[in-house]
Length: 131
Length: 191
Image (tube, rainbow over all chains, first blue to last red; front, side, top):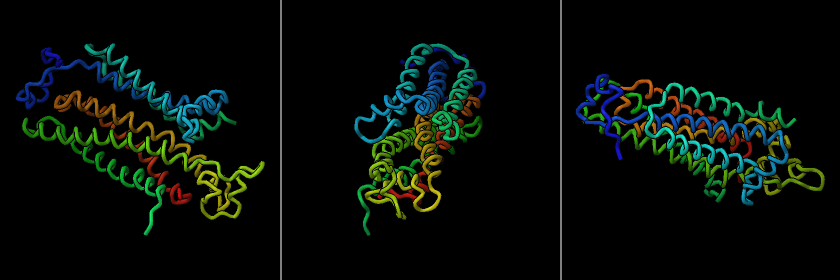
């Protein structure tokens, strides 16, 4: 059901052409959840990539999630990263469903998590943990 | 003219989905960039948004299809260990100039049988196979933000900028995957 709150974000003041569209205001929480969850998913991918090099038992566990398709540990890394992304998004979306979360903070958190995760997928970094 | 089953999949994964991804990204980026105050009538906003939703969600679908097909269909052909003979893991690649039935693309690159090729695997493939998965996550988040705010993005330049950053981030991750995929398929094709 659409939120029927007044225009608390003053969108029509900034863009008068929106008045004709009769838009209903929405809280920022769900968008913040999407931003943080995307960064978290990439962070988990990067962490698993690094840890898979550093830990043989974890490497073997991640490899078991390939279901005999020959994908190797990449299967486990990506399945768990996507699961972490989906679950964190769902949880945050429920938690922040009707809240006006600070979007700049949410984006900054997501960005930092994403950058750390992306660095974890960079071979010159993660291969050092396998030496 | 003949294309093998495996070659056909590499064409679907890299060429067809890759081209569609580029088209969806370009269209979505142009529409998102143009959502600015004073540049559209109300009727124009509705039409522009329709194109924007199609572009962004098409990019999401293509990104997921690309990483899933790449990881679960093509990657196992790339990384199969075919060259093992006794203790020597790469014996089947001796004298090879291309991958073969006894030397998978991964075996071929690591064997250095035809020049210094091991870095193509250790840097190119290792980076590509991981970072590409950031593309669907970022594209989905960007598409959600675009759909959630819709026309209100016109009044919120900061949120529009965030959507653009995630959108371009998804494209960047896909470019790493796509570029290395093209090079790797040139150096060690899946046949």
